Image (cartoon, rainbow, N blue to C red; front, side):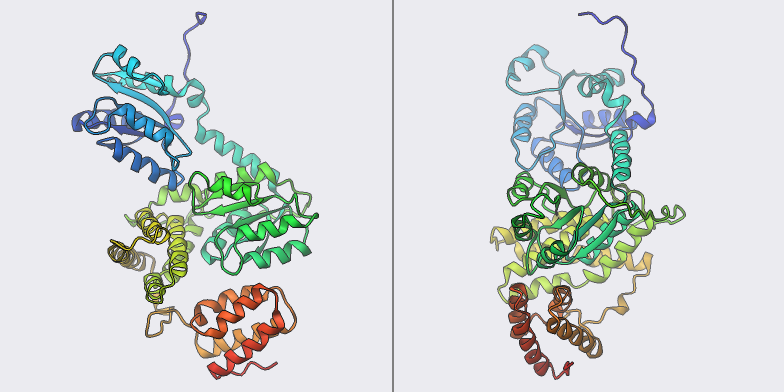
Length: 506
């Protein structure tokens, strides 16, 4: 039917901020014209010169949890044309979040519609493009409601509602990486959520047996016991078979969520953590029965961040809910813990331990993404794929590139943040090591935990692993602790102490 009145679109600067639009056109002048128009409307446009470049850009945006909302796709381009590009994007298993598509052409509209049969298009725009026709095409593609209540606004409101519903809940955070744990703890506790922690799956299984949690946030890749096996074991207990368990992983590809659900998890939260998505997903599953609320003070808005071109600070702060103090802290922790990551990767390769090298680069990729070092995270992803596929050609070059980029980033972090690199103690081969007094204290504490059958021994084991992983006794201890053979592990620890010439007797 005919509508009774002209549609009224409530548009202002806030409505249009935040919508990312990808321009795909082989003509440089056309790209520049459209980009200028979109910027004048306060959109966030990016331009590429062809179909293959568009796919690469969309995959990169999704990995960063900052996908495009719309693509303006030219039809006739050399190589892969616009229609074929859209087909590939819609079938791409790495792109679970497919944007809206507006096809742009200087050719016949009827010919395009004929050729596009079987391809879903959200709009069509005929060149030459004017500001009004371009805006109208975007509005028609996304719909009036998409601008009156934008996704950005909806997510903000939904996140606030989610936080209110989660206040007072008690969750177990299972995460082996200190930086990721600090980030998650800060976000959760600031929302009035009580948090207990575990550093590996085995410890999580034991804690779930003893404590009535409202939900579990489970990292997937951890030493001793990963998140998949931990979830599987938790589900075997009738008392925890329905406990909400949400996976957290840096692999944000299609199929990862399905794998998590197959192992018994309820849902999937990709890393780097997006604070909005985190709370919305948690609220979908976690219904608190506790009433112990403890909301922390609001963030300090007077905090500032020096500019480092290699860090995408704005998008990172959005993910962290604007917590500048937290981001500063995480940048400092990154520089402390990852300064020698390339050394650790090379050591693992020298001993033909691809599994350790893969874990190192996976963790590094996740942490780089967390602080907004997008280019380094992307390069780390390339290296991680090489390890997964046993690709050796070009691997050394990829490692060298990553090392150069890391040195450059750490140098700039050091210069503007004053990161205390001098507090990091290295051995001759570049590994971070404890002084003997600290190591003795740690080993004595570990020995006492093993004697008392303390489940927190798994946490201490993680702290000691990097320091002592080259000792054969440490490998045996790890296996025994994983199997809860604490008595035999304690005997092996005494042998290790003798080797180190350290007294740890109780």
